[in-house]
Image (cartoon, rainbow, N blue to C red; front, side, top):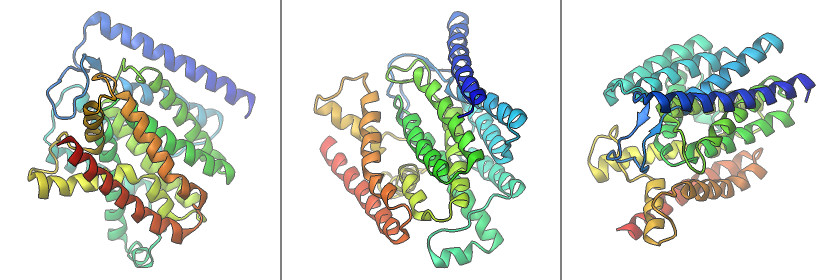
Length: 352
């Protein structure tokens, strides 16, 4: 790595650390409640003390510095990153500052934003790994709908699993390290730079969130990480055509299937609106299971993040080895879906 990149990386880590430190200090001294999470009664709440939702602001701030550095000193600029991330960060920030938006209206805003962003950035998915779907992707309107659905699954999946210290951020870190490695091997230098600084930004946040949370990601952070993952996977897939599209499906399987499975579970099992939150997600059931087995203290939800992400990494390892084998990745993707359903059913029975 060039000397100026090393210097900037050290500066970014230092600035990000002190920015977070002093931001927390300002909020604590002023007793500013606008960004505080002190609702312990909502279904997805597993914390016991008031915590500020500053993670999205932290990551957005350090990423902004990184993008400015790359743009002015490296002449590297990806407009899709800045446009997607800025708008979805701001959308999540509205909820963090307690401007409540009806779930149906929020979903409509997301769809409208994605429609504008996908068209203006000319973002597309070239290959799906299935011939009939590849043919459909040549139709503009179908291609637009497909990519919007992909973004909705990943962004909302990120928001769904965000709730335990480090669960989403460590999960995102694993994904970005894998994408970074793929692009580094194939010498996609510009994307490598962006992925590297995204990784640094997540590490800065983790310093204040894991294992004990001084700050939460909030909706702004969850939407931001989800958007970053979606854009990065699409860019990596386009730049590395030898990697099976189903490998990227495997990489995002937890985020995608959490939304997909939850949607139908709420409709047919719980019989409630799929847009309303509940406490029956995989990570929540796993947390309850460990509590019943006395393997977990009530306030140590960070261990769930370690267990789930360790299992995720173990399960996707075969795909990492055979990422260029489309047939293997296709069948292994459906194997992992089966593993998820089986694991969920076992946990549900154990906690009843």
